[in-house]
Image (cartoon, rainbow, N blue to C red; front, top):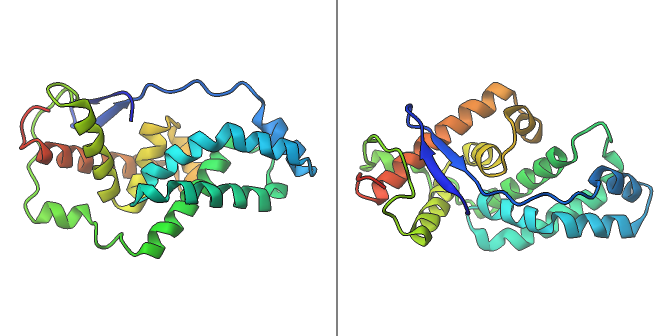
Length: 211
């Protein structure tokens, strides 16, 4: 997870991500060619989206080792349903929605969601939030990344998806709402709750001191 974490005055995490430049290739045009039955166009889509899908899956899944399997399922679903793609629809949002659904299915199959409840963890003695401005000062970078990944896995499924799409992938609330199939206000609420939970988790991991 490249980038830095900041906290605003309300205690919400502002995730400043060093984002990779997206390919200039017109994915919509490739999708339309694949829709017409061009296998080379779909292969090119897979090449362009592979890294992004695996990265996002690793953050949405409770067990990140499943990310490669999830990516394969995402592309299988894209291939099977490519004829449903509407050129008026945002390609990224369509990919995100399929990835979210695949990861949700995998998480449910493993039945880990109820076992890894951040709510239960906090009720068992989670730390009270304190004022923090930077989450990357005074903390080993690799340790912070591990803590962030662990914190993400402990989030409730819907809140994790909202946070990943909004703060990690950088989607606007409206785009994330389309990808998740919910209202924009719901995305904002879920993402804010997730930031608060993740902030509490990080503070607990550092003993409630300045991170």
